[in-house]
Image (cartoon, rainbow, N blue to C red):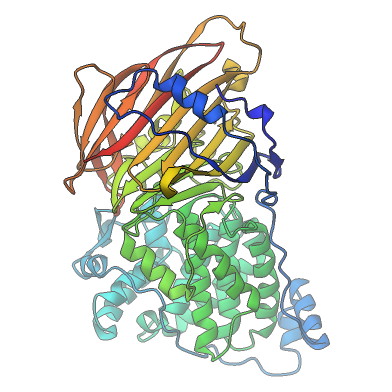
Length: 627
């Protein structure tokens, strides 16, 4: 068993410890998968003999970025202060006649929509994640709530991009105006205060207003023009009062982006723009960690933040201006962590409620951002480790779940991993909790956020962090220790070794879960060991059930070995991999995976299970490509 306490570790802030040591010698080659006798003791012995190296301080976990608003003249500072104090109409229009309501520029949409979904709209129904909702049956008043994904799609008016992608403006505008007229009839006036759910949250109101501004030609070319300009102004005034009451920081970001865009595109908007730019940049500083990861630790949240800033930047360009440097710099921070969660085919891993978002959708977003960069390998503040070995990519969650106030679909996924080879997913997480209510039944939402829905160890079928309702999470993992090293072997061979541990099961069972992953540089072998280390001494009595789950990628054919200690994996690309374990019972069970369109796909999972003493235990395993 590895004694982590004997190694130096750099404290990187509340909830995370870690360091990266220089290269150390790689242990001798291990037996082939069919000769696994004594693997557990061999692997532990090899790892414990690694010499300790100097640990490099990687920086404080989720430290807030330090942004400053753009420099202003004394007069502009006065205008911004006055607007923030509520002296808006009286001060800004005291010395001149208010300008006529109109838009000062037409925005070029930077993010093309889904043509298939747009075609479905023209055929009479909303289409999202495979679910069809007839337009006539959509609950536009928000009294009877739709499933959350459809609610965001319909009330956020993000479908305007899809409609625009499916035909010309002349073809799409009449339909957009009919839907908009029905929505205005159902929502004649905004409520006094922001809601926590439904169509009048800060998140949906900000997203809706920004969609209206970016796709204005679709909704302002007909008889609703005057009314819509008034509604745009009304939305902006509502956000002026309520943006600070957003459900979370990402919701506030949507509100601030919409306010800045309104200040840019409506006449007499300078005061609103100056005030909102300061709020936007302050919000970005609170939302983004040092390495560019959002505090939600979610790739979906990362994509939403990028999309909001991309659309806002398009509003600046419509007026032949440049966004503040902090906005451009934030886009440069946000993209590399998102790319760290891509597999070889360019699609995303399934983390924190997300699904395997398709490669073309990720590529369009990155291209629109204008950022040209490579994925981050060691995203310590955001918490995801990435190792690349030839055509093999490993993603490893080595951090606590997001804090409750930042989580939207928080998952108990600490120490889970995903593995792919040549774009083929081998080990995955189920994903899809954020899409529950579509083709994925809403009743599965909490189960998809559970530890058992991720490829990691579970004790007594209990979550390592409590999974609560409404996407929130409770107590559990509070601290994760991380150690990443490069191992050197003979003939220029090598490997990446990542070791991490969490305390999520300490309070209930007195056991720390420690996981060690070693990925060879040729990408043909992943060796792992899951250890349960007692915190109350080795004299603890009793046993507890454990299960180590490996959810397998789609299309993989599985066959168990005669000795019951291994599983053969035939991948769709024709390659063959073998899984072997040094102890425990090996079973193959059914599972579920959310594909690139957030649709459920039946898959299988390998489960290593049994009973372990409260005095601790260790379980070694090996996943190797054959031939």
